Structure formats: C-alpha cells, structure tokens
Image (cartoon, rainbow, N blue to C red; front, side, top):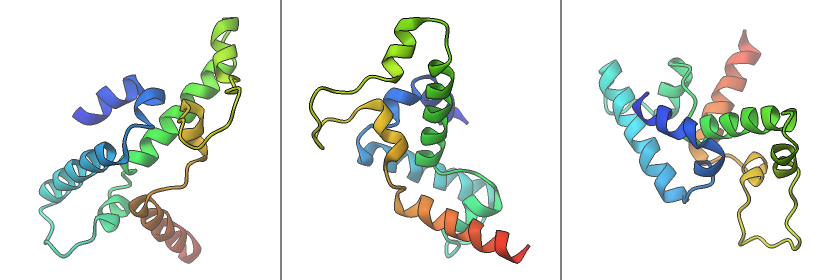
Length: 124
C-alpha cells in the first residue's frame, strides 16, 4: 500500500517507466506478500496474486491509467480533453506516450496471474 499511494498519484506518467523500475517494485511487493502470508519459498508469485486477489504492479498501473484517461476524456476542461486525444505527428516505437500504456502487452507475471484466474473462472 505504501508503493501504490505514490504510484497512483502519477499513474499516467509512472505507468510507462522503465521496465526494470517496475520489476523492482514488483519484487518488493512479492516479498511483502510472502512475508505477510508466511508462505513457503516454493510458492509461486502468481499463486500469491491469485489467492490474495492482488493485481500485479503493471496491471494496477494500467488500470489506474485507464481510469485517469476515462475521467479526463469527459472532463469539462477542453485542454484536458485535448491531451487525452493527442496523437504525435510521427509514429515511432522509440517514443513512449502515456496513452500507449493501455495497449502494451502484459508482462510475464501478469499474464500468468490472468491465466490462473481464467482457469479458476472456467471451473466455477
């Protein structure tokens, strides 16, 4: 929760930080989960996130960014609405725009958690 308060404040900007920085935050979150549940070392991190219903850092940031852009798109301020619809004059894969976070593929841990959730949903 300590990490999330800071990240939520700047989610559209922080969501497309370097993957290494997000990975370090994910490692910290995994350590806290392991300590809080007093789990054995062989329990996978994806199992923690599924059982605790805790989204991964990247999934949480993507969801927070989506909420921000949804709210900003319907805001009465025209300048804020213009930022949501902004398209860069030229398209290149090297320039990361805040809105591009919503279309990025999930990282390995997020994909594993989502597949576990899909399996559980089909068995329910």
